[in-house]
Length: 294
Image (cartoon, rainbow, N blue to C red; front, side, top):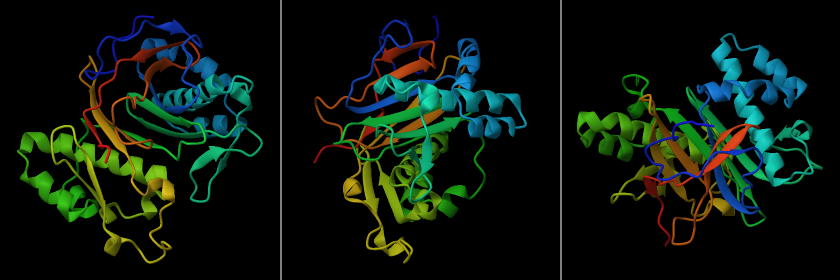
């Protein structure tokens, strides 16, 4: 395989290896990326479709545009192929999924328990996997950072603190900040399982120093139907990571991850670039921003 690196966040990457020669760590948090527009990815579509369930194939067929059908097959094939790396006794085709209490997909009863979350935007698929009993829920989000931003979106959805910080930036920096915030917020509501039922202004992010992410909840903005504080103990102090990825073709994506412990020496989250079922390599990945251990 001879694919370009996933982004300028990547240093020296390991060589491509045939799937499944690159085995993940059996415990902990990992991230898997797939560049769905690459020719090598297109060659993996048939194998991905072969492991999809009948209901997934029906969903895929409802997409009008071929590019969306291709991405759906790659994204959901990636989930199944990666889960089988962690649990080889389960074939990719044999994974089954249910909707959790808030509608978030989770592995069906009777199969090995492993937390995962999937996101995709034009050009990039991202999968986060949290393996091991000590790992809590996980959320990942990827946003295409070159698309147009509608006027007033930040003021409509973001916390006032975030809007003030955003609008104080030079105009040339505001687009990246917008998508940084959007992807972080999506990663959090996906990890909690609440989705957009949790207002995006009920929590906020700030960046107190280069490379740092600070997170704050605003209980006065949380709707009354959220019992108590509405959060499981796993999210008493959520950890975040975010990076802006730039492809050789000039595409830009904001990748955000919620889950695991805050960044600290020795706490490494492996990031893999993959062509589902065909090739994989580990990246020497550098996050632009992280929560700090307290």
